[in-house]
Length: 311
Image (cartoon, rainbow, N blue to C red; front, side, top):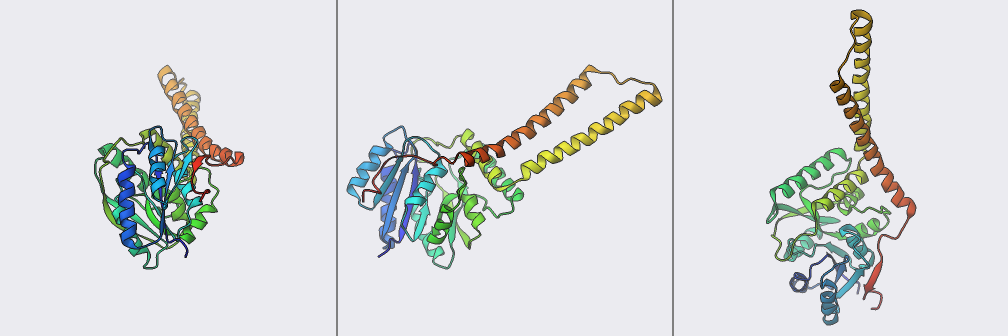
C-alpha cells in the first residue's frame, strides 16, 4: 500500500521545540488514520537538534531525517524533503510551532475536495513585531503587483499539496528556491484555509532581517523582470531631464549671454546620476548572479547524515 502522507519539517536550532512538535504531529496523523512519514531536515543546526532527531527516530520508525553538512537555507531544506518524500500528499510546516500541526487535518479535508494545493492563510501573527508584519505585508503585495502570477498574500510555506504538484516542483532547476512562488507559477488548482499563527514558544527566530531581505530579492528576481524595466525607465527619465538641462544651458549662454555656475548644483547632479547608475548596475547584478548560480550547476545541498537510504 503506497504511503499516504509525508510531512516535511525544516529545522534550524529547534532543539527546544522538536519533541513537542513530534508529539503533536504524531497525534494528529494517527487521529487522521493515514499511513505517514515525518521528514525532519536539519539545516546545519548548532545546538542539539540533530541529536534530538536521532533520538526520536530511534524510537519511531515513521520518522526520517536529513542532516546537511552546513546551513543551506530554509527553502533548500524544504526542497530536499520534497526530493526524498514518498507520500501521496505532502505537508510543508516549519519547526517553530508557530504553525499549529492540528490544522493539517483541515488542510487534508480541503484538498480532498478536488484541489491540488491548499495553503494556510494567516489572519493574525502573534508575537511578531510591527516592523516585521508591515514589511512582510508590503513585500507580498508588491510582489503580487509586479509579477504575472498570483502569489497568495499573507501566507508562508505551510500548506498541503498532492503528488502531481510535488513531481512538477522537482523538475524546476532554479538554484535559488522560492517555493511559494514556484507552486503558484505551476498554475494548479489551489485554495486556502485561514488560521491564527501562534507566538513562538521557545528560542528565537532564525529568520533575521538580512535573511528576509535576501529572500525578498530571490522572490522578486525569480519571478519578475520589473526591476530591469524600472532601471531602464529611470535611465530614460534621467536622460530626458539631462537633455532639457543641456538645452537650457546652451540657450542661456547663446541667447541670454549667461553662464550657468554653481558647485553645489554640479555636485548634486553628479551624485544623483551616479546613484542612478549604481542602482541600475546593482539590479542587473542580481540577475547576473542568478545566471551565474545556474551556470555553475552545483548541487543545492550536501547531506552529512540521513536514515532515509538505510531503510
